[in-house]
Length: 138
Image 1 (spheres, rainbow, N blue to C red):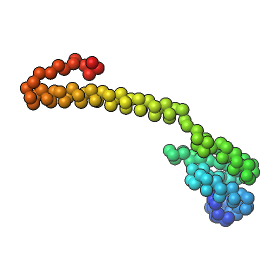
Image 2: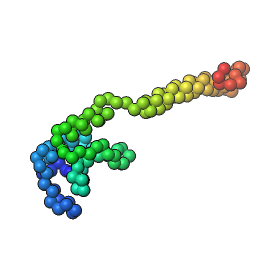
Image 3: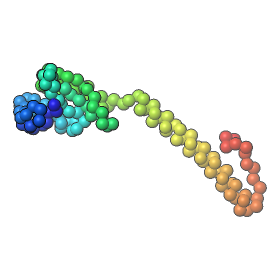
């Protein structure tokens, strides 16, 4: 059951739910820090609080569970947040670097093709002669 940042709310399964002040405070702080990206749930079968991340693809991922919802849980959540610490995914960085390198190569080839194309245009419109290489590479 997802906990909301309100003192009392109603669910069909649990009925009227009233949060204690310390639990409400933690839920509010999580909401302020992470908006809809991180949610706090309460698991009635175990009595544990469950922190869940909603990914950009719409998939829910378990962050961690804890039997008590207090300041330590919030500290643990903040410490586990790699985005807040400036973490950069090495795979994503390698992909971006490769894309930039390929774009530079493509730009270089396009410039070479453009130069030869301009020369051909001049030849066709002026009747002059020009040397055209067998390949763009040289």
